[in-house]
Image (tube, rainbow, N blue to C red; front, side, top):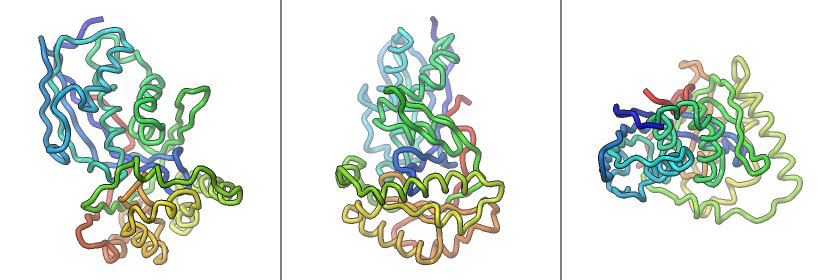
Length: 303
């Protein structure tokens, strides 16, 4: 195999996982994207980063995009002599919006595109499996890779996923401060009551039905986003997030913690006139941003 002589441009969307009851299984790709340009060079590693979190990420081989590219190159059995990488970040870090999934997936997709013959090898299934092994769970990487609404699971040690279309839109509320995913996960109890698990499983099934309906219904989305496994259990790590979630849901809005938090996502029917942004903004805490996002239907891709 040989390397492309031209740079490769890749975009990867932000993602919101869990969506309430779909813990570690459901994911949604959002129209907020990181972009990267990478080229094979004669030697060395040169990294440029601009945008969100640029001051916090390394400029060496520990950069997550570089690590994921090297993992993909190793699967392909090749290593380039050098790389020039430019990242333009828009996805906030540590906010429950899949920034690490975007870095991992975009790196693997870029590596695949840089190798002649790599467009079809590894397959999307191989990309998903490798990305999930690096991320530690498949929900965010599945949505980032495939776009739309995804249902992910692990079978015989390998991550798998299916994609579904949805016409929902999201109102995303993002705080200034971050919460490490490791901290949020550490707060979850090792076991849960049987009744809570059964009730949450029922709502997860209902949520897939509600989100894939030809005309999603706000009241059904509200019922479907209720869960008993992970959001309240993390409230002490993100008290403002929990208070905001309670206020929004008391107002009848289908709000969930995005991923491990602390961002909040409100799921609403896709018609522009059906998104009551004013209703959401009136509950938005000071210092938080509020924006309406469409669903990214394409997922990570080479431009």
